[in-house]
Image (cartoon, rainbow, N blue to C red; front, side, top):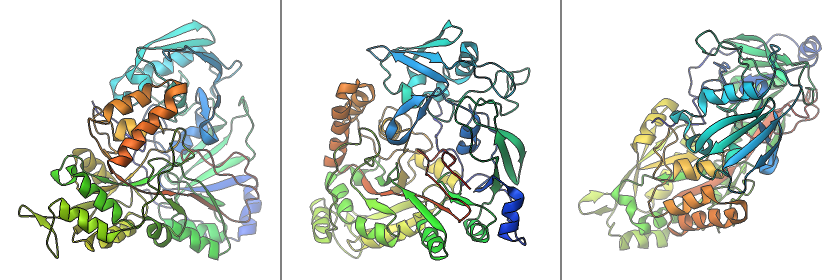
Length: 520
């Protein structure tokens, strides 16, 4: 079974040619555009089939609705499901579907359309990285506007997973060819495609949309793979805003540059964590003293200041506080070079300039990838310098997105930088996919694995609401006490915009465009 990553190739996918409008005054361009919001995207929107891992998340989110919406802080709100009920044992979820909704091709939204979509992917093994797929028993049409989904095991993750962008969103049953293959991006969402081309995608409002109507007349997504070109376009007034980890990311360094040139930088608490992970399958890191020593060599506060320009919070927690059930805050240790050296001595790694044990030198291969984890190169260089002071040899191996997605699941590294799944996937996904040893490594790889923690993880993933916080805390405490990984920081989410944008709010997740509440 191949486990597909929810962070499918975005920045590392085939780069399209950029489009940068120059030579016209910003005021003239704004007048011609009217209420068109112009945003850059790092690559073309791609195949927008909501059941495939190809298109840009945020574009799919504009077109296709979920059963339920994930909102700030993890609150679940109605969407295509107007209401729902669940059994006390979390094995049955019954959804009352929203009435009077149609797809943009006129097809009705009803229980038949819902089941047709769910049958496209839910029973298939490739989607078993989600509990709703792995635990599925059957999908039942109760009446024309009600569906019931039965699970073989308790599945308290269901509502959160039904909010995901893919493969969970709903496509018109008529938007496929005679063989059932996707043919067009037809959804029930607030937007529909007006034009789609390699250089960009234009979307216009769905006038029949059931929810709040968009506040702009058009969204023009312009393909701009290069960050410097995006910054120039923003300052010139050729685009209105930029940001989003999977849309057109703004690095901390670029944020400071944009601030100094008069652009407005908007930040919000990040929902994921940058983690330095040990390869759990090599002997070197089986010794807890070695893992503790490596942790004590890291200057987390210094990294947040020097590399992240204060757009990050140092941490020893797997999840930031904005993630539900993220647990109590662990104290962030100060760098302690002498204690780290002592721990390595106790573990039998001695000598200089590079320590050795049983004739083997303590040389470490640190895999970095700017495509997969922003600021990897700068982080890698700082980590290399910090570890070398204790007699650890560190070789940086910089790889592209595709190579990393091949090497990490095969454990071809000693240390690697990881990023947790973030909202809406956590708290369930990162511990379930990236730590639980019984799950095959997906393209994101394993931050850590140990059969000793597996029972705690399984209990957390199936715990009923009253027991869930305690069950998750038990997992986090075990990982912390065993120095199982090196959490580094929670990065802030960064967007920047120019003066044409009068109100702006960062969306609930990194998989959405900042369209709610925006005004020009």
